[in-house]
Amino acid sequence: MKTSKTSRRDFLKLTTATSVLAGTSTTLLSRPRMTGQQSFSANNRIQIALIGAGGQGQYDTQEALKVPGVELVAAADVYDGRLIHVKERFGSHVSTTRDYREVLADDTIDAVIIGTPDHWHKHIAIEAMESGKDVYVEKPMVQKAAEGTELVAAQNRTKQILQVGSQRVSNVLYEHAKQIYESGRLGNLNMVEAWWDRNSAVGAWQYTIPADASPETVDWDKFLGHAPKRSFDATRMFRWRNYQDYGTGVAGDLFVHLFSGLHFIVGSDGPTRIFATGGLRYWKDGRDVPDVMLGLYDYPATDAHPEFTLALRVNFADGAAGGSGFRFVGDEAVMSVGSRVGLTRRARRTSPGYTINTFSNEAQKAFLDDYQSKYPGARQELTPTEEEYFSAPNGYSDTLDHFQNFFDAIRTRQPVVEDANFGLRAAGPAVLSNVSYFEKKPVRWNPKDMQVTT
Ligand SMILES: NC(=O)c1ccc[n+]([C@@H]2O[C@H](COP(=O)([O-])OP(=O)(O)OC[C@H]3O[C@@H](n4cnc5c(N)ncnc54)[C@H](O)[C@@H]3O)[C@@H](O)[C@H]2O)c1
Image (cartoon, rainbow, N blue to C red; front, side, top):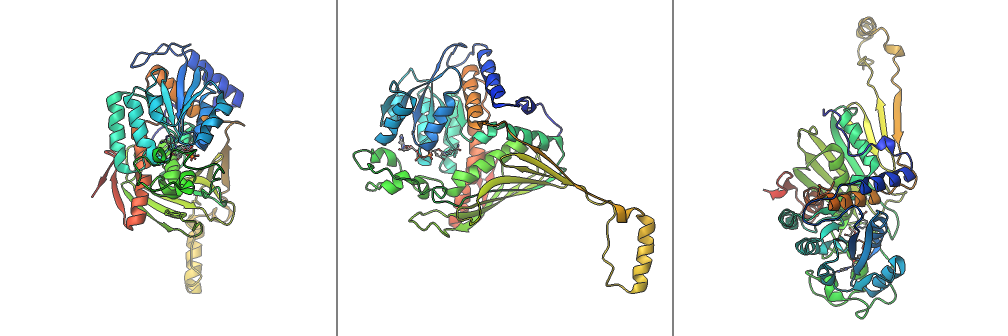
């Protein structure tokens, strides 16, 4: 097993939300002036724009603006109602447009947050980097695995900072889980299970469609972009996750978070074999993606981890409570990661036990005499379960930490925690789960080269 490494942050020092914020702002202001493509002094502001001002885009912006020295100057969205609300929420000084290209043409903007539907991620991210912007692009980084190579190449070519928005990679709980994993306390990891179940209409992507949605308030062609042409359809627009043309199904939406978290914690590049199955079992509302999906993934042994198997699950018709989490199963302990990190260990008995009651009485007696002499303390041997738990401070926001990491990288030109390579190594197996599901066959993937193999 790996030995413990120095972590990026010392989780144990982060005892309250206040100290998290105080710590980050001190870090920011004490950073030296950076060298690189762009230049910000410690007091210079970073001017950002939001492209795709829906639920996540607005939330991302709210958290990004908590980082000192960051200012929202523009927003682009294809639905007018969202642009109106950007001004209501972030100030009337924010300039708004239906056309994201106007944002990219504005040289005063340093960085963009891309919160559009998945089918736009690659296109806007590449255009943004080519126009000299640093990019925070929401997960999944790409809609199709093949798009990832182009995006990675664009990041290498332009040298712009690109952070993918799976914020759990910056979460102090995941950092703590990583430390536990690297300490070797699980023994040898042999499998990982992770799930994300839901039990509500909104959880299953039946989002509210605004009453004023129409071809007048929506630039439908700009929503469609490279997707197949069709006439205006408010359901497709506001519930885009339900359609393969714009979204990535439950795998791209939720498996991707699980891949990101797993890869961060165990230091993995990803699986070599991908197999997914499932079906559309409950939400038969016209969607063309499954609402129940199970995925199985082979992870080969590397320097960071032994060979293990990953099992993922999403169920949108979970008739109990829903919920999400991980179990990292080692031969000496099990680590759970959810709203807190847990470590559970029950040592195996040192005596092997026996199954003798079908043997002759004489054989049983002979066995017991021998056993008791070999293991005299066996009857009294107790193996209690030991449990430990770790929680994040109240009010903790991993999205804020993820943005802090992004803006630090913009100022220092140092790498982010979740660059294009990391993003593709999570999005690749996630969206290839869809290929496996629809084509009903396993897919082989080279996680180092980030390519499908035959
Ligand atoms: N990191 C997370 O935890 C997390 C959570 C939710 C969503 N997301 C991701 O964020 C992205 C957005 O999801 P959402 O739930 O906010 O969806 P949403 O539908 O609420 O928002 C998407 C917005 O993009 C706009 N849009 C569409 N095409 C556009 C274009 N060409 N130019 C500008 N704007 C355009 C839409 O009008 C809409 O306002 C998705 O990729 C999703 O996977 C991430």
